[in-house]
Image (cartoon, rainbow, N blue to C red; front, side, top):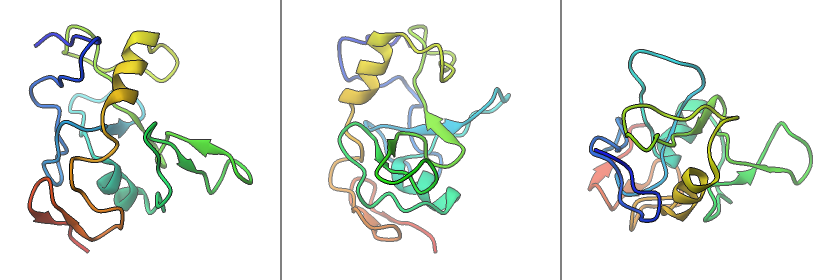
Length: 131
C-alpha cells in the first residue's frame, strides 16, 4: 500500500508488534534488518528501559543522555518508523524527506485512549502491557 503523506492514513501492517497499537507513531531499531519490528511509544520505552513520561505530540521526550533539558524522538536505540511512499521500506534517520517527517509528526503519539504510564492498560488495544 502506498503512503499518502498528505493524510494520516497508515499502511497495512503499520502496528505495534508487541501490543497491536495502530494509527499512531511507531518506532523501529536502528539499522537494516530483514524483519523490522515496529513498536509504539510505550512498548519502545519498555524495551529500552526509558522513561518517556513527558513525551509530546511530536514524539519527543526529555533525554536522559543528551544533556539537561534536551529532547529527542529517539527512544534508546529505536528511531521513528517512517515508511517510504511505496510503503515497502522505512527511511533512515538522515534521509527522511520533509513530507514524510511531517506525516509521522501528525500521527498521534499514542493510540487513542492509551495510558501515559508504562505498564498501564493500552485502552486502544484492550491489552495489558507485560511487566
